[in-house]
Image (cartoon, rainbow, N blue to C red):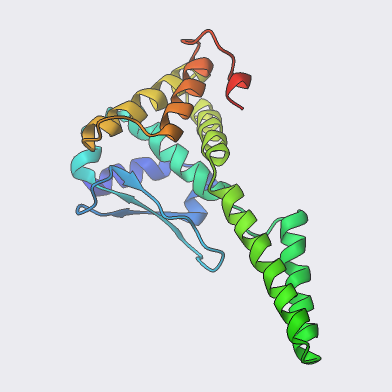
Length: 199
């Protein structure tokens, strides 16, 4: 597999938002098949690292869905969207500036604490199991626009999660992967439980 050819192919299946925000990079030394770090607000690009020696061991549909899931997760991280936590960050920062201008140490401490708590909450919301589940569903929707049925896309992502665990030499899937697998089985129709059981 020529990494440059594969990267071009992967860029073609990405949604436009993914092509604008993310960048696929080769990282042969990493132990993971595909990886991405949590994007911080000042990062203009959101890199996706792929070990192509391991990547080639997956089937093409598995690779497609793994990439779409990672892109969906990265593009789903929103630091600046109007909600209560972002409003709290802004209020805390403004309060901190006002209190520092007045040299009020207690007010500055309260404003700083408020800002920190809101930032931690934003980070937790974007780095939670629910965000992974949402990214799975988003990846499946994009895959449907690329010719996969919903059940096929869910099945390919499910098999990719299991295959990656074996390729990386892990003895078992972690809790988040097990939760995602159950949800994907329900979407693929191979589980009697509905997707609502896993929310």
